[in-house]
Image (cartoon, rainbow, N blue to C red):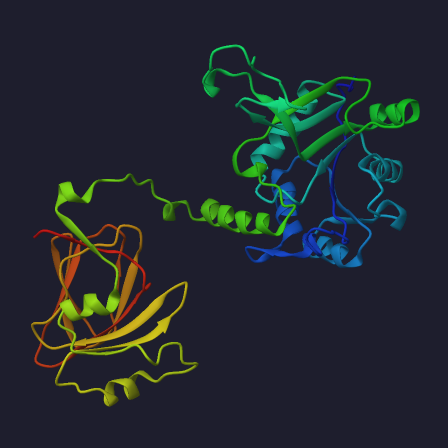
Length: 384
């Protein structure tokens, strides 16, 4: 059992350079930082460790440890091969770095939070665990070697909410008491799973369960990171039948512009490396309304739109996209959710998704705006 005296708690982040499924995985950039940096920062922010080490055979990974102000333990090459198991490099590290409790934090779960790290260490100490394993609950009918684990084939169907969860290793967090691990290694040749001693299980939930093993996992982690950092961009929405609201959806931009009275449209010169807006304006017939799409990519589009006084667009909204305009010339009457405002040259106007809006060119000459959105965004036209 773990003693009740103060313990020296060490965090060790293992990171080989020689990943096979994803080349140099731990150095791959994720949301602007190398993958391993996210675990380092979470460990430091938790404030529960006496020392934090990155354990690797590679000096390139050691450089990341130095940049993020944690210690670097250079693992012997023999413990960095595909055949070296977790027991082997744990034993090597424990023998050479003094402590009482070792917490292994895997860098392949970059969305682990400081609160989860704190909770893990607190539970290990409070419950006096010799080994603590992070696990994930799966509350659904489960099999092992084609045999039921948490249900009976002959029983009536039971909702998953009523089933006993099956647990799998999360592995993002593993904890061992030094003495018990060494005792198991000496007696049994292994201590990773706990062996003899008190072993506990700590449940990990949500985004922290994302584990990067393959290329597609990086894409999932990027989206999850964006969600965590920008939750306001993921507002809860529900389907509402549009027929009940007497609404019409339009997506084809050229057709929409024709209905809005745009007489000249140029979609042939988009995505040029460099354009000069005054030159575009000078090249057009400014006695008529016109548009020139400057940018059109998978991420966004930007279109110059010029309209004469009294012209504009129809009342509409975008259910899942926020757009904005830069006013290049003239004055526009901007109506958003029934509120009117005059906008002029140099103004930037933001229209959030779901806001009903329309515009009207004012003054005595052409009014020009740069509309930034995306070409495939639905335009929903309610009955006025």
